[in-house]
Amino acid sequence: MMYLAVFTGGALGSLLRELLIAQDLGVWPMSSSWVVNVIACAAIGWLYAIRHRLHERVMHLWAVGFCGGLSTFSTFAADISAYLSRDELPTALASVSLEIFVGLLAVVIGERCGHLLFGRSS
Figure 1: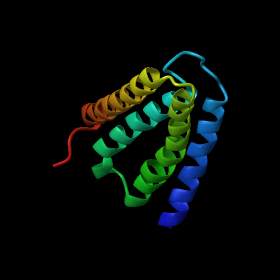
Figure 2 (figure 1 turned 180 degrees about the vertical axis):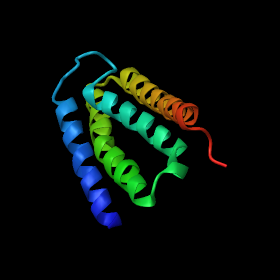
Figure 3 (figure 1 turned 90 degrees about the horizontal axis):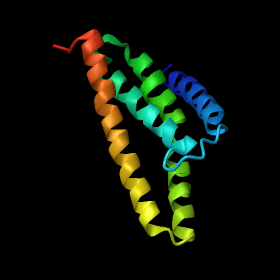
Figure 4 (figure 1 turned 120 degrees about the horizontal axis):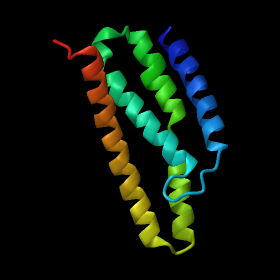
């Protein structure tokens, strides 16, 4: 059952990622992959905060499957590689730094929201 939960969540997350990435925002650094990665970070923070209220399979469905399918390291790496191939090292470094910082911030904000809405675990 755990594998089915991960598979189902991954399929849903991947489909949503494809729908969102198809919308090119065209604004640096907010590429579509950047946006889905930040959304996945916020979701994983929220899920982590409320994990004590969720069944293990539900966590596998949403945290491992959905967030894993939604986020995309490979596209992030390809975006950075594209900057480097165009000799845009400062842009590549800024993009990496900003996405990591904003992603970590999104995890913290997601976790705080989860704690505020559902309380802390004992």
